[in-house]
Length: 108
Image (spheres, rainbow, N blue to C red):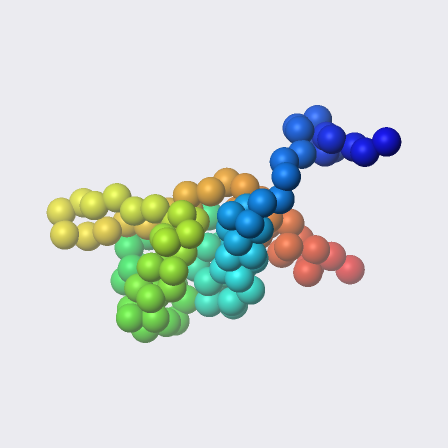
């Protein structure tokens, strides 16, 4: 008998092409060390590009490029305050995945 529910009793969905693409892009986002560092920082607090660059020792252009990639996947969002954009994470599910992966990597 086929199981149609996952461990949380949520009905399993068919893995159509769009779902597969989004999942693969999410894992692609999480496969890059710079994006992991940015997402990890943004899971802790909202930051402007300059704050991210300073905290992570990166060029602002590098941060902007990676934020654009993450924004296109709806993994980060921003709010404008005057001329400054403040970024934060936009998907608790992905933050949970990231935290689980970090926990896994740190587990003895």
